[in-house]
Image (cartoon, rainbow, N blue to C red; front, side, top):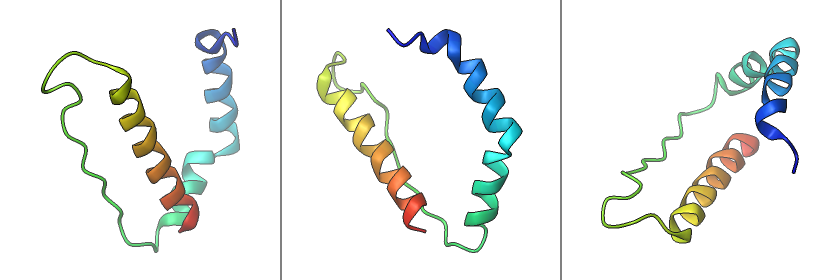
Length: 69
């Protein structure tokens, strides 16, 4: 295992020291807003792997839109 719960504070501190969030906001300031509407995750039954795929795909869409400008 990667020990991500223990390592998360390290990642957050490094990103903060780099000013990563501020740089991302600065890069995006002149771009039009992109809004991806996401409904309730488990409205019609129990959670299953399809829900995970749905969330992963939405994450990919948001990240790729940000990287494309």
